[in-house]
Length: 288
Image 1 (cartoon, one colour):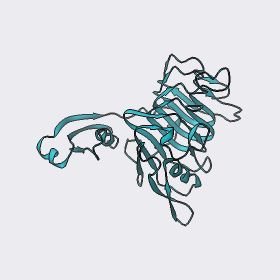
Image 2: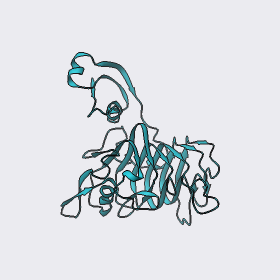
Image 3: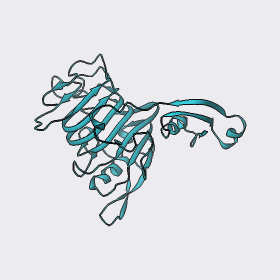
Image 4: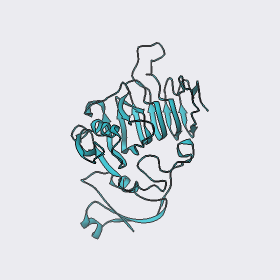
């Protein structure tokens, strides 16, 4: 029996707990407080938990993309970072900074993720954003796309998942750049009015899984073909990537796949919905 309680009056607490469940069936008791659990809680019997579709090259000969294991539970030693619009600049986390295992305390969402770039922190990280996060809420944005997720090189796994929880699950006014990112998962949020690309995988990314996203048009750029921003989801010089179950709404240049690549890519696109999107579904320059 799973007991589900609200956390600090956050309405989405049920969704948070659901993230922790394995595939299968379970019973749940739902209430806001311990007293309510005892007196007037609701019971959900035979609650069905379904696994994400893990087909595609991101999982080819590879287990557990991001902070989660393939059974839907967090990896051992994984840490969970809750972020809201009110805390994105002030949230803190200790990150290992050297081979001696010493740590520094990083403040702000972008700064914490940037701490992983040194390559010494091995504990998986699950970033759970609650509600909508705007560009003005962020501590800083380190790329022209917006939030930068960058590893030390393309051999050290980051094991990072970024997900958003709630009916208003979105990032607004910025996108994301992945570079040297190994074992990174992005899921369950919308990207609205991004700066350039909604999400760009640019250079030496491996085993990345981007799924269940809603990607909208971006801010108007300086070129004639950038009335709706640049790309929605571009993948360049990256290997073993899956884009699945994403919704592209009124995007302009939706996908660019490959740009001067010289190696085999192994990119999977499946179960994506191109809804009034204009072009590049995808545009493949180099790929396999």
